[in-house]
Image (cartoon, rainbow, N blue to C red; front, side, top):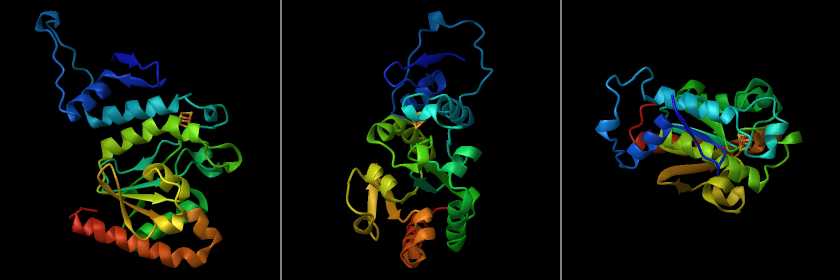
Length: 235
Ligand code: SF4
């Protein structure tokens, strides 16, 4: 399969991915029939599984910011690729960096319990982070790292097309809503990201440190459930 190098972003975009986005934007790609070989090779179908695989592969070899030098592995995202609910956190921590999966460890267990409280299994939603690589010592992501990694999350959102996005924690909320308002000011209301309803809530790691806030988190979860129900979402 042929690939195109995008020298500005450093990402490798396959022909199938490029065509997918052009199709999505309603742009037809015309090819001269004279240049078509008699036997057109159709060994790899241009389906979403292939697109996801190519995207994950591109992320795993990404070197667009300095975090690639200290990561054990990239943490791409996990879950239902057609999920109604997309959960976006901040960045991988130590456990995530070691296991290659977002929201594992104690914070992940709490997230699973929160989801179960509104009738979801972890596998029914999609879970990703703003950053795909762990910042050393769990420091806050730098703006240039968030900017560099944004393209990967954008592509995930476009592929999933969720009904609702849940931003967990200050970093995710600030990036997705392009604001520096406090988390307290952002939660408790409905926002929009690219037309998709977005709810802000506390990061499970914060709730572990401050369990008294779980009550507010529960309000946020109920708001999400209501939104999904009003959309007629299947999960
Ligand atoms: Fe690439 Fe994102 Fe990892 Fe930086 S954090 S190296 S942009 S995948």
